[in-house]
Length: 543
Image (cartoon, rainbow, N blue to C red):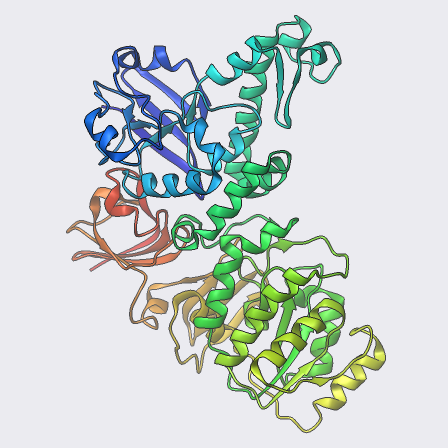
C-alpha cells in the first residue's frame, strides 16, 4: 500500500516522502516511472485525450492494475488515500489555459487530498514551477529526452538550439561532456530542487510570477487559478512567516490579498469612533515602526481611527498592521498607481465605507492613494476633507492634520478587539484586558490570567484556554474519546467547523481533553484524508 507523507504545503504545492513497496523518495521529483511503476507497461486505455467526449471515455475506461491510478475529468475517481494518481496527456492542457484550470479544479475536488500527483511526459525546466503550483508532485524524463532528440537545449526560461551547449550557458556535467540529453535532465532536476526550496519557504507564488513571464499560457493559467477564488482560498494558509513580495500586477489577485480585503470589509469591527483619517503606507512594516507613521500618530493624537491606504491590500486599519499579510509584504515603490490598481483598491475602500460609516473622513494622502480615496468617496457619495496638498509627512501637513482634528475626542486604543474580529469573526468585549510586553513579544491578560499572545512570525493571535472562553463558537476541531499525547492526526478527528484554514488557531474539543494549537489542514481536506497531521497541538488540558 503506497503512502504519501506530506511535510510542507504551499497552496496546492507540497513536499513530502512517497513510499511504494520497498522504495521511498522525496517529492517533488523526476524519476524513471516505468521502473518505479512496472504496472504502467501493461496499462490500457490510459491515453484517452482529456477533451474526449464522455461517451468515448465511458466506453474505454482505463484498466488500472496498480500504481499509479489513472484519473480523467470525465470519469468517477477510483483513487484512494495514499495512492499516486496519474493524469495522462496533461501536457496537452497547456493549449487552453481556461480548460487547464477547469480540469484541474474538477480533478482536485474529487481526489483524496493525500494522494501524490504524476504528470507524465509534461515536465520541462520551464514548466516545473507552474506544474508544482498546480499541485503535481511526480514527473519523468520523457519531455526533456524528447527535446534532446529534437536538438533543443532546455533551461527554465525556455529551450534553445543545441549549438548553445558550447556557449557557456550552463556548467553541468552534461555540458562539459557535450551530452545534451544529460544536460536537459540535470536542468530539470535543478529546477525541481529550486521549486522545492521555494515551497519550503512558502514563496512558490513569487517564483511562478517570475518564471511564467516567458510563456503566455502559463501567465493565463496563473490568472485563471486566481479567478477560482473559492477553490484556491481553501488551499492557502492564513499566515506565512516570510515576506510576501508583490512585484507584479498579478499580485493584486493573490488569494492572500483578496482574503485580507474580504475580512477587513466583512469581519473586522472598528472601534467606536466617527472620525477617520486616511494615511499613506510606508516601506517599513509594521507601519508604526516607520518614522513617517510615528509623526502621523503624534499629529492625530488618537483623535481619529487611522486607516492606511496601500497597494496591493487596499485598506489596513491600524489595529491590523501586524497581521499577515499587512505586516509582511513588500512592493516596488514608484509613486505611480495605474488605472487598474486604483480601481481595485478604490473598490475595497468603497465597500468598507459603505459598511462602516463615519461622520468625518480626512484624507491625509498624496498621489495614487489620494486618487483612490477620491474615487471611493465619489462612488459611495461621501465628502472627503483634505489635510495636505503635498508630502503628508512635511511639518505643514502634520500641523494641518493636527488642526483638522482639533476638538475631537480621543478614542481608546483597542487593537485586540479589531484583531479578534478579523481573525475569529466575533465581536467581543475586551474591557479590562491589558497589554504586556513589547512588539513582537506581546501578551494580553486580564488580571493575572493570560488570554492571548501574538505569533511573532505571522502576527496572528494565539488564544490560551481562558482566551478561547471569549470566542464562543467557530474554529473548533472535535476528536474521538482519547487524550492527545502530541499532534492530533487526521484519523482521530470526528468533525470540524467549516472555514478552518491551514495555519488557523483552533480549539481541540474531546470528551477527555481540550487542546489548543494550529490547524495543519483546511477543514475541507480533513474528511478527504486518512493520514497526516490535522492540528499541531501547543497545549493539552485534561478534563
